[in-house]
Image 1 (cartoon, rainbow, N blue to C red):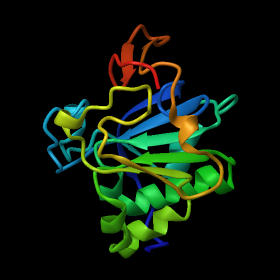
Image 2: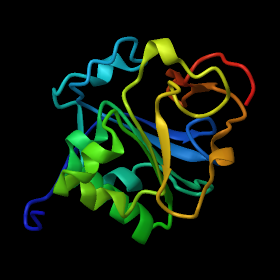
Image 3: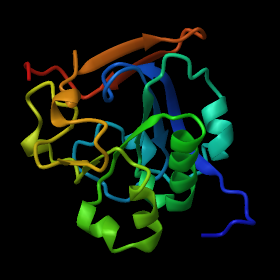
Length: 191
């Protein structure tokens, strides 16, 4: 991995605090850029590879207060299409701030293991939720995933599957600037 070159991550958007994107209070970071084109994707605005908001990993974690935040959830777009930035972000989140890390990806775990630049990231991820979104296999419980083909990989002992049964699936956040953000998965039944 290149050490001398500053690494920026192209970010689509940030939710400073959420209760439906993984266990506890979490900062949610949506990476920009994805070529998976999953039919019915809930976040198609993240597909373009146009630079939206470039941040260094350290700058990204300093942007919002982390008081009361248990961890970060990273989604997209596709985080592993920016593997070196993702690696640095995960490493800083874990080592500097002691945050837990949850990453959603359209790649499968086996695909990630085959790519050295992606394999680096796995050592700093607590939970990986893998697999493309499949609209015909929509998750109908409060489990924090989009479709039932997506699998949970618990890469540390920090969490178990029960921790991903959310108190709700949709959250509406009204920011200080008046911007309304909807996050989560959809209206669904209980776990």
